[in-house]
Length: 429
Image (cartoon, rainbow, N blue to C red; front, side, top):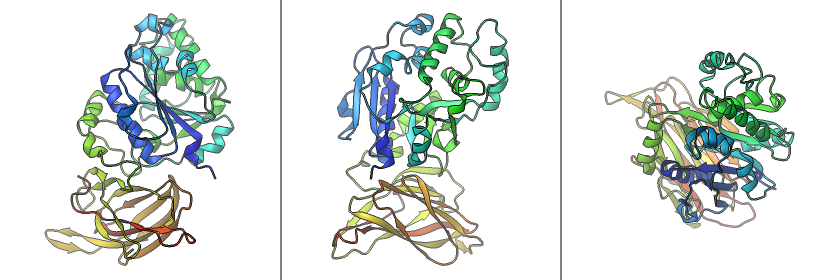
């Protein structure tokens, strides 16, 4: 059976040194979460600046060099300028240059770090029926206020109505079906040209997000196709915000946030994490009281021999979010979760509540258990899955869990090695 991620092709468009460097992190983290997706990275620099080797040996990644043309938008704001790229990345020139595919199309900004698998399977039905999925931006209310002055400008005709026309949609990640999308990007380019001719490109609030919202908002030509996604699908953050354990994709939109990601890339996505290894990756709190910021990183994974398959284990501070790639020979996972009392002034604090632990298979919630004053044993089936994720939330007086994890071999496959979790104090630093 074809997995959900095999139905998608993500495309990134990069121009400039910073965007080029960010795209490597974006693609590496995406392929960890969804190994079977196809990826096309469009190098839009005038001279090729991105090589296939920079993505390592990750399969399914294509680098394509396309130089932006001097189209009507370029003539208004400058070819290759930031405002030009906002619109050109959805232009007929770029879309026609992409290799043919029968997969669903995902436009994705390069300044996104994928933190855990998304539930791509939930999109298959709606996309097959022509829906277009995008996340609602956190600035919707501010956008509503700023639209008043834009809509009042004479002769623009860019917006379907003088009101907001619906929520502000985050254009950093858009899922669509090229075979049935209501000519969405054709409408997009038409409005971009119209804005350029009206000298309005630099006046639109949130640039291409304004056009996407107008097309998919109330009264727009693709209004009935909108499939709004939650903030966890494309969380907009900066250097002082964090999407938390439920965030799937962190979108580092500001200049300071981009710099932070590049400066801290080794901790956020350690070089040792790859599809060739079964290291879990993700986040855990930096203290056992669960009140501190999350630490991105990985835990060490040991592989025991078939003759001694006992799993090792380690203590994880809550909240936590970890993801594993599932070995081909595994049909499920076994977790043993044991509560660890929080400590205050050197003394243990009795747990007064139950920690909630969520289990996801390929980004879809599969099970949820509570951990109080006794260990909990969970067997999680995931035959044919790519990933399994665990999210744990703290309870009062319960700030950590002792976690033991093993992948279960196929019932008819004989003895295979058991992959086990082993986490130490500095594993996520």
